[in-house]
Length: 216
Image (cartoon, rainbow, N blue to C red):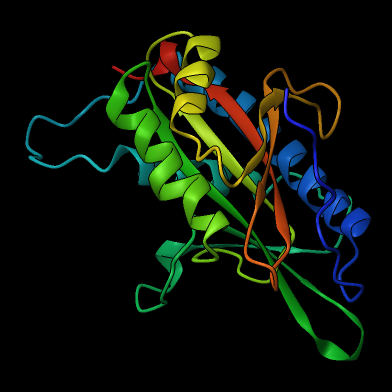
């Protein structure tokens, strides 16, 4: 197992503080997921016959946020999603927005992806998710970010193993390993990746949500 390298911490934000925000966001999103799970057992996500293209990933993300906004947060932050600003560049699925002293606003990103135990979606989880954080396309100056996997088919452990096969061995200092950012969430993982010299490394927390029984 690779040794975890400690990310370079920008004192303005503080790694511990970021962990608190991301941890609470994951808690709220997980509670939202549990509510959706109960509701959708009676009426699963089903592709409309009349639609040629079904943007399921966007639907799952938007439903998660719409449910999450009504769940109490322990910290002072707001939610934003890419759908609110279609002109925004480098759009990330979910953003946690919070303010520091002197009015500075900071954004902690979470990218969402559908997942199955197949090559295409697991590769996309890396190429259009993990890799975008590593290259700085997402969260360029932040030492931490999150990812959410909507498990549509297949076993979670098998999916994690498949994702690991796509990780860049030159930049990955810790492959996906079970780690709880907070208690009571069943499947959370941690990975660590080197960026360039100026940007240091980035810690990624991954939360896998089991949607298998509510997607048809």
